[in-house]
Amino acid sequence: MTALLELDGVSKRFPIGRRRLFASAPPPQVHAVDDVSLTVAPGETLGLVGESGCGKSTLVRLITRLLDVTRGTISFDRREISDVPARLFARDAARVHIQMVFQDAGESINPRFTAADAIADPLRRLLGLRGAALRARVEEAAEQCGLPRELLGRFPHQLSGGQRARVGIARAIGTRPRLLVLDEPTAALDVSVQVTVLKLLQRLKAELGLSYIFVSHDLNVVRLLCDRVVVMYLGRIVEQGPAQAVFDAPKHPYTRSLIAAVPRLDGMRPDVPRLAGEPRSPVDPDPNACRFHGRCPVGEARCGAAMPALRDFGQGRFAACHLAGEG
Amino acid sequence: MSNTLAHARYVLAENPVTLLAALLFAAFAAMAILGPAIAPFDPLASDTMRALQAPTWRHLFGTDQLGRDILSRVIVAARIDLGIALASVALVFAAGGLAGLAAGFFGGWVDAVVGRVADTIMAFPLFVLAMGIVAALGNTIPNIVLATAIINFPLYARVARAETMTRREAGFVDAARLSGHRDGALVLLQVLPNIMPIMVVQMSLTMGYAILNAAGLSFIGLGVRPPMAEWGIMVAEGAGFIVSGEWWIALFPGATLMLAVFCFNLLGDGLRDIADPRRRT
Image (cartoon, rainbow over all chains, first blue to last red; front, side, top):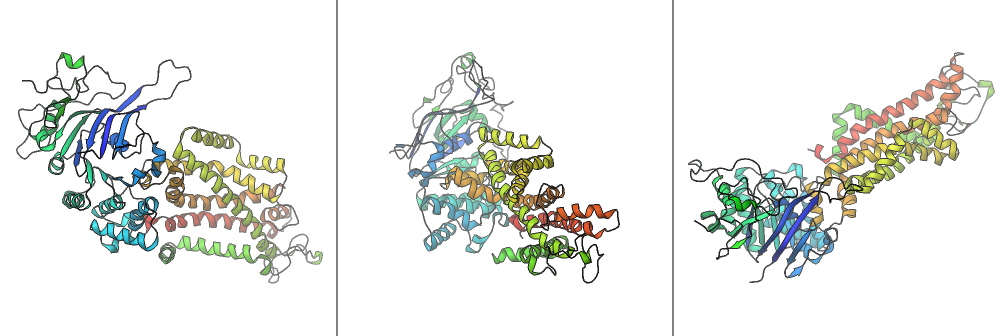
């Protein structure tokens, strides 16, 4: 099966501080995303998890081509799209097919647009629809997302959180994209609405044949909705594999801690150590040490001397840990 | 559109001060547009037989040293004073607003250039700068407009820049990029409408200052030239007569000037309520 989206060795670095006039050394850099390779198959849902600051959002912005990669390539439908600068990507043929649902639906809708304006904007711009055809398409997208027609004339501040989320989703599916990036689509919603929005997303995926990249903090949701999961730590992939398998038997100590941190009715799992402290600084990290070293509950001396590669453990499972698979 | 009108009516009904400002504005607008048509006398016709008459029923605001009807002159002057102010506000809105928008959105060298230009203008006492510009370029009406626009540039550029910066990272900007907008179009079509409410308030507030500035330049002899009817000149001409008891010559144009500034300042707040969709319920 050919991949719909393929990332190969993608890195993104941000220089920090001002470039000095006579500086000999290059300015320090934040390694936001480091050497990430992954694929998304047609019809697949890929979960992307990791704590705040692990590079999820940067990766999402790279995939949706709002940011340019520093290194590596991104291919969509077997065509490289990372060589088109982000500022010109608005005119790229793939723009129609890679769309996104934002975390905070309220903030992602222009306050001066009505719901109909917001949904119509990409249709008008990317598909060139006008007049009756545009109106029909807007109403169709709204209906698919369960947004009553009466609400289309309202401004975002006149809509509830759930209704705003539906507007955000309707806008994203309007152009009939093939890949939808969901950046914590339910994080800003209250629990009762979360379920209906997740059900809506599941239904749309089946109806429209979409592929999802699902970024979430909620591991329970990732486990339910995702076919495969990618776990990130400080810009690097530490583990990936089929969601069920990863959750049942995580290979990387970070994944273990992450899963153990999911609140459960019966309290903490006693056998997995709880993570303390903060991740290391992402500014010019040591290329010869595991990023998790120092915070890792099982780390050894070699973890501080060599960066573990992402190793293949068969059945689609990968983990970047020297100790994975041992003992 | 009818929605906006209904909302405007609601704001006016809720807020008597804005209603007052709107009525004052309507009166000034009528004076500016109709001008000579509603003035009871020819503003330039002198009649030395009737010079320096205190207000009477025939001359409500009295007459000046040349016997010209002050009420007529005050009415006719509205067009020139408001015209200069409006032209300069439009000019500075276009130049300062766009410069601030670009500076706030793109940052980098654009921001640095706009920021330094604004700093340079701010380094001068603004009225003195306006005097200098008019003195150097000649006191014609276009130069008064230009000078008034230049001294207001930093205000517009800074407000637009700050408002744009708070929205640059907003989700709807990224959403617009995903919708196929390039940065240039995005700034004008999506960010600018969002900063318009605050810019409109700014325009109304600086409109008052612009009137004051134009009148001030004329008052010191660097603006509009006599015998043209203009509030600043009229106050200047009348100032000399206050000592001898002819108070009405300076008072009426001065009070009109004050009311005009007052009106635009009050209007600013009301306009914000009308222009901001978030206040719409």
